[in-house]
Image 1: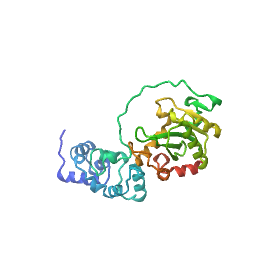
Image 2: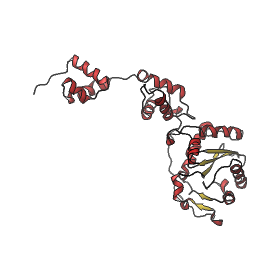
Image 3: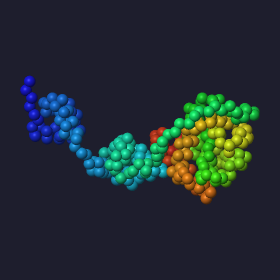
Image 4: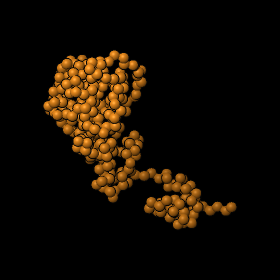
Length: 303
């Protein structure tokens, strides 16, 4: 069988047609060349050409650099808004942007991302055997009804504490609605269980927060929270020890709060006014999980 090499003219024609977005099979049909020939040429030449990202995605990168904010406008949100406002311009996928960041091909760095990767550590699972069944108000999470996991109604809350410096009494109590992901933050000056219980109860009443169930961890500061559950006429479910994944909504929301108050920060001088502003910022933040709607939008949807 006779083989002929591609001429410079044919190579130029292939490059032009490929640059126009045609498939290799379409190009082979137009030029009357074997598909495998074009495939080998593309692998050897066309695919090896260095693409200038700054030129090809100039409009997108300019938008990304000016609008990205690790606190309330993530990579995914930037891409969503860019596609909506600049439909004519080239736009990469979120995965591609993360690859560029990892390989230092654009100005954004890994340290600028919303979430930092940490080394995971495995902890042993412990069985929780002691529960307060007084009036069947405080129950283990294994007894929590399955319908709560569907997140189809407001009022099922997760409550956790965000700590500051070691040996510091001040902390932040975070309350999150499992359905809408709306968050409320409370400044706590002490860790006494009865103080925390009264603080949460008064805050729920004054802010008219709908409550149908409460899920907490096994922190000592929540030992008296069953009193609040009893007053509100709802069940309080306690997670198993060392099982923070059972309060996943709480943990992810706390990570958002940490964008404003990083780990190692003192909570002593944090005011309730500042926490209210942080709550507003987070609740106004577009969420990918809600098709880029915010927590306030979801609250109106399920109300």
